[in-house]
Amino acid sequence: MTFFPLSGMSGFVVELIVFFGIITSQKYLFMMKILSKLVLVGFFSPYKKKIV
Image 1 (cartoon, rainbow, N blue to C red):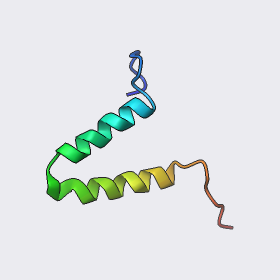
Image 2: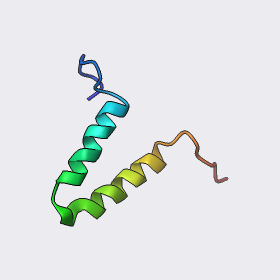
Image 3: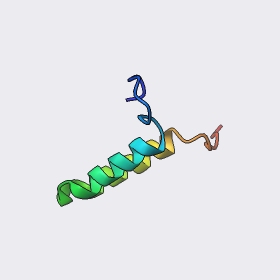
Image 4: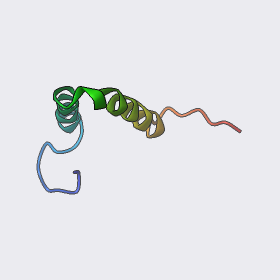
């Protein structure tokens, strides 16, 4: 959504909207959404340890 020229559509505001969308969605998908969010945060985190 960051390619749209709308103010407030990148960063914390969108993360908050996504988080509230996760909470209000179906409960059987809740754990899968939380786990996928954690995997994405770990994958795109700037604090990676290099394994060589």
